[in-house]
Length: 542
Image 1 (cartoon, rainbow, N blue to C red):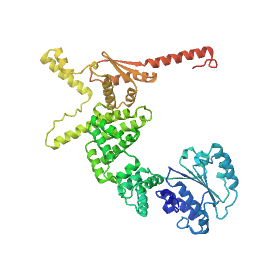
Image 2: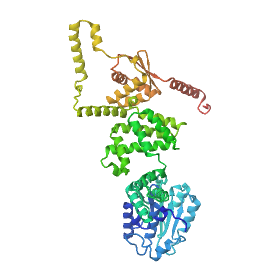
Image 3: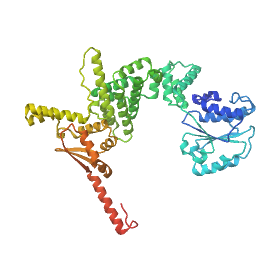
């Protein structure tokens, strides 16, 4: 006999065999025992969670003469008859290939005939969302008022594509993703039965790779079963999954944490030489950063991660060398890169740029990067103090702005009496610099940081979208649409911008509209004038 795949060989035949769907099993078993069966059921959920298996078990259970705890006994005449693939009392329809109105009309004609050897005639319609609109309309009346002997079970992975008229006529059951722990238990029992030796971490890695789908996990377990005759290890599973070398990945992430830009580019070259695409590398790096974050914030981290002890210790060493804010920012950088790689022509350059950017928080004005730098400084100060070195800290200023100005004026007056020299007073008091000495990009970063600090979220969002340039002592803010220009040009907005940059000497602020936007407005105005003269039905805009 030909080899049977694990996910087919170990397909459950009773409700007890359904993994991770206890809420659905309980409801269906109670309906069978109390004889409160519905005429239409909708099973929805992601792939490999047991929808079709539950439908087959339910179809047998409602026809079984001697059900055991709600599950089919497998020994009575009906169970034996339904086990025969040629039986016509339980009919499976693949809506992906039979999605037309003619197939549904044929179903409507045949549903009137009573079952041959069982109590109920059950129609299992898989991937029901693939039916056409006409086919759904043809099914509607039959689904609402079927014959007493007919039960419909609709299964789908995309419930949002099913018309509301169909949904309202079905009992809906949502199948959940299966936790990795339960999938790992199932795979372990299968390997024990198959006589395959394995590491617990290897089985857990397979379970995690299934991402909540038992069928996906068993497909990987099937490959791992044939990978080698010896003991299945964690590294074997990583090789099967096509993941990058974990040791190289750990060193790569460690270089990012330790600000080693040169080593980062060398590590990328080593990873790329393994033949992995940049998309796979970004996904692998993101996974490592996520694991480090779990270690940083969770007490039972390895219970969640399921890593071998040596690798877990290596992860802990890296995690202890940084803080949560830094990890969050690195994770954000690589997540953005994963999206950007879909549209770039040179993925490697994009990946390298992101990696170097993640290793240089001092040039990043993102709020998470700034918080990370502050936290790093605080940790260094704490480490110095713990070694017996006293660090003199600046006193916290609790005065209001008016009190500060009043004190400053008083000090100025006293100093004026002592020196009687106005130029010396200005030189001693006003140590601010001109905006001409600052790069426009750095000035924008300072402005964004100060706006976030004073809680001006709306203005912060506006400044994110504009261009900033410096000409002499003039700060020019160029908006790209009229609405943004009008909001920025209002006096409260101008005052807040000036207030946020009060560390610089007084400067002139200009709010402008980009030349491109002006041109588009001019074209729109001209178009409207032409339409008013000649009429909308005559003017054609190309």
